[in-house]
Structure formats: structure tokens, C-alpha cells
Length: 291
Image 1: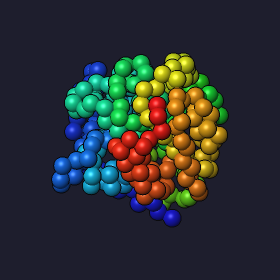
Image 2 (image 1 turned 90 degrees about the vertical axis):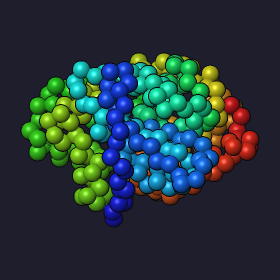
Image 3 (image 1 turned 60 degrees about the horizontal axis):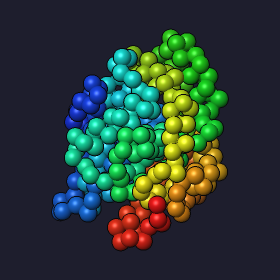
Image 4 (image 1 turned 30 degrees about the horizontal axis):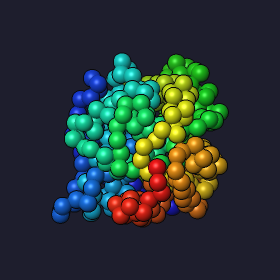
């Protein structure tokens, strides 16, 4: 089965916090209903949002970015890629785009980054939709922890072994088989010399120290939140969605997408787009769960 990733336009580069960030903006042909910012996780890039972004852009202005260390953004080894640094950059990028209280949608560690910008950097959102996010303990697979503890060793792997490892890791995030073309597209940023070092560096930089600063402040979230999860996520079990629900103020609801693993925007983009449209319609008309 091929999930046929939909290519995004070539990026425009924005310098934030000294780092070159690959960004894209998709716009409707008529006045936009609002602004939507899409945040990716690891080991992904904004490419995972391709189909969702195209669908939403018929109504909204859609803003995408590759975090430094990922995708087509800088992979310079001197650029910090920890969660707090990425949160600061998201805040700076929203200022560059002149966005005030956008709709924010975040996947995987993108959830921690978006929450960090909100809770630690004081950025306001109209609402926040979190998909299979890395926030609560425990997180990080045994492989993830092995790499984090031995990043310099993995960085020295022969390129063919590194490529096989990355592609197998990516394939393990989905329930349905990805085509070779889809796997190659998702793996491509990590397969040259700079990408190989960046792949292991970003894993090593991710720490529960940063997520703990967020979890201890979850009760202070100031916007409506909805949580989406793949019912068969092998990386972060769906129980985490309900644990997160109990930590947030108000009555945040959980949507499970059946038959989906960790990568709902790729596995079932139509279902993700429909959930986002419904959510934004509710918040626009004041029927969202209170924060």
C-alpha cells in the first residue's frame, strides 16, 4: 500500500535565533477563515503534513516549518536542537509571520514544542490540537534511548547501515506498509553526511528535563485543547492521550483514529483534516470545551 505523500512547495528560509528555518505558507484563493500553524515531530519534517496542509489551505492560511535539525532546515552541528530551543524559535517564527492567536496543530515532539512556546514563552493560541504527542512520561522507545546514550557511535555507522536503520525506524511508525517511495521521501533528509550526524544529534538532544518543565505547567494552558491519537500507536500508546486529558484544564476531548499507528497525518490524512475542520468550526462558533 502506498500512502502517496503529497509534495510541498519549495521552502522560503527565515533566520530565527541564528538558524535558517525552511518555511512554507499555503493560502486559499479567497479571504482566509483563519491561520493554521502545523508543527512536526521526530524524525519527521513538515512533509508529513503535505496532504492535510493542501486540504486545509482551501479555507485557511496554512503555515509550515521544518525545525532546525530536520527536513530542509539547517543541520549545522552548532545549532541547538533541544525542545526549549525549538520552542523559542517557534515563538520567533510566529512573530516573523505576524500571527496573533493562530490555530496550532502539533504532532509528536511538536506537541512539546508548541506547549513550550505557549507555557514558557507566553505565546497565545486560538486553540491547540495535539496528535500523538511527546509530553508525559514515559516516552522514548528502547531504540531511542540506546541511540541517545550512544549517539557518537551511531554517527560513525557506514552509510548503508545508517540508511537501513533510518528506513526501518520510519516504517515502524505506521500500521500499514509504506511504499519504498514514501519511505525514501521521509528518510531522504537524514541520508547524506550532514543528515546522518543530525539524525543522531537530535535524538541525543531530546530530554525529559525539557518535557518536565512543560508537564508541571499543563494546568496553566490558556486555550482550548483537543487530543488526537492513533488507536494502534506503537511508539506512544493511546493511554497517554487520556492521561494527558486529565492533566489539562477544562474538558479537553480525545479523538481516536482506528487502525492508525503513530503517523495519522500520513496514514489517514482525510480523517485528520476532517477532525481539524470540525474542531476549528466548534472553536470559531464558541462551542469548544472550555479551557
